[in-house]
Length: 506
Image (cartoon, rainbow, N blue to C red):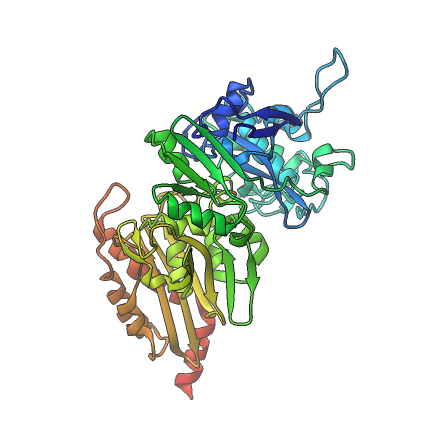
């Protein structure tokens, strides 16, 4: 099929003659939309940010910012894209276009210097500008408002403006020359979209429905089927196919390592992989839901996942990345596996012969290897209920946000009457696979939640896994951080301490 096309800034653009591996970034630049830039080609700088119309959480449509350098253009067949050039309102004949409110604030507040990364910032900022649940305390920041190191403008916290703007929306965008203060000022100054704003109005209609795509050239093809059953049959026939959802991992392979696949199969819009249900005994999370969608739909119902999400890469990456993809790659330093191990999660694997449920603790078999068979897909992740009440996710990395972890530790403990009734601890970065800290769990379960128990278990935790030396951390540092992590959990968990004191005193 060669009729694949994308609606860009309101105009349909045919995908041909682009190759199936062509990214959205290259597709746009070939059409003269050079505001979209390549900085890192791996989703870390945000210079390539564009807006895509996606199914909304609070409105029929959300404008979602994604890294155009990672997404295959063919994956947006039938979809709508807005670039930085498309945000401005066209002027009358002979007059220049009117700047978008986000562009206007970036200009008047000095948020741009060399301008290279500015369009990416503008697109990420526009996605937050149009977020339906953004709740301003008033319409934009007051110039010259009160500020101190602990508070943002007008007494708000430093990461949220009085206009409801969440600075984490820009966590995936880098600026090398302007400095972030004027960019933040611009973000905190934007008001609410007007009733006449066409992109705000667009949110009230449904986004484009997914379309079946078979885009082929020479010896390579990009394929999206309508149903899970069709997709599984294709994967059974083509075990060499590369499966992608948000393409946040495969996109890096294409750009940095020049990898090419004879067949890429997209699963990101399959309805069977996009369900989220809270049942009486478990939470079912579709493997193709983006992390942002899971975060907003769960809305804190699974506290350990809520703690994970802000530490997982950047908002731009979370807008494309999925739990299925993070587990499917089998990386020992993925951030979600330790959390899901601590939650006692399982994965539902689907193939042409049916489905099977596998505990995540039994899923990984070696470095980037798992029990998933050829032709199988991760359909969903199941988290059993009830949840353990004492939870924490500790990510040790060189940067607070948007970094790869040196060590990741997730805890889920049930402490009742001062005794640890159940302990689940997931670890990342200390072995060839994500692992459960089973020896430490055994050292905690059935024992009082006291400093003595915790200190003894912390020494056990230091010996879990087979940490190695690399450029991120030494093996000794990783081991030390494991032990410190449990001590930190104990220090930051006051309520069980109180229960322990009462139990001991009685």
